[in-house]
Length: 241
Length: 241
DNA sequence: CAGTGGTCTAGACCACCAG
DNA sequence: TGGTGGTCTAGACCACTGA
Image (spheres, rainbow over the protein chains, first blue to last red):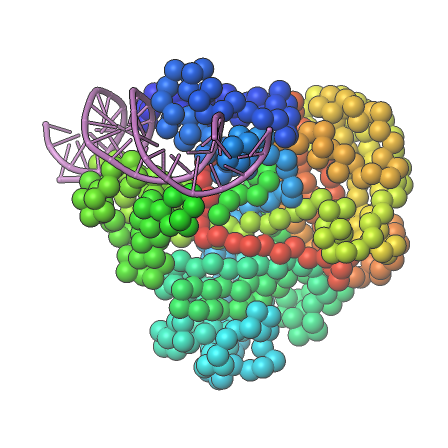
């Protein structure tokens, strides 16, 4: 139930999960059918089904018609990375945050832009570059292209104080994105901005964000390797649809 | 339903999700109560409830008793990183994989071990180092510590051909882990093994894996930055419990 | 073709909490 | 304190698929 901290459904789920995690049921093992679990727990089928569904979503169980339900075999590990808004991250760390815009220009989409994913029709874009500071130390270099077709209000923004990422988070909240995370040696210009040597490893995060209105933004963030890393809570197997 | 590709529950979920993603319902907006949705769709309450529950799990909706359900406000972005088994990754890329063990030693847990997370009682551990090759090119350096208390069978393994990670995946399949991903300049020894310059940026993945039996393994993988990066499918907001 | 999961119903009781 | 979500029931019909 909602209050008693334990629920029949939760108990069933916990029982099944425990037997899987403890190894009693190895990957590939066929778990009891819903009908058997209904009999075992003396509950309705919907309760059992919801418990199993939760474990399917958690990636612990795979279901097949006719054949039954089986303990899943782990494939890849999926790490859930939290990629926070930089000002919020700084606030959480108790450090002073500042954004400095380096350049801003409205122009047509350039074929040389990082159109890694076919950005569609070459409409007008806003190209913004800036520097993120933490306690007045350069923390990240940002190069961003904004699709004015998907976020027309961006044309009115100066992005002199608020970084475009934070503004976008408010304006176009529900998006999907792909990330590529890599280690790079910074370009000379980037190295100078970050006040590090070009031989210093930097963490580079490329993000390609889309909304229902099309692609919204493509951004590259370069962090000095010694000042930033990504931590990931984690879960086994894949998540789900 | 299961076959007709569209289900009443799915349709309800899609309707709600669309209105959220399109911005009709902005973050913080109160969505109709379950009773209202039941009336609107002429279905039972459980159908509506399951649809909303799915959106709660997706992070799009927050529920409160009495107050109702609201469109969630995005916090951090959570990127779902897929961290595959290296041999499987190579197979997917169509490249030949090979593992070369560099060292293996059974010893007590050393206080200088990367016990970043308090590895608990100092029992015996297996320390393994090795090199991963892709098409005979060094691809990653691995330094691993295995907890023999949690995986006693590891003591019988030589890890001369199969990397310990793959073995563990079979033996202790259901684990949880934390990852830290960072960009580093490789140690001289590591650089030599990878055949890269110490000034070359490398991607470093630290993984701390636990099972119900305690911590299982702590591993550090160092990849040459130009040969590996992590890509992430993505979802907004956090997932859930 | 028969067993399994996928979905749905029309109720019900209860805990929670904002007004 | 009443409205809301949280949970559960005892059925039901159906699609899929492995034997």
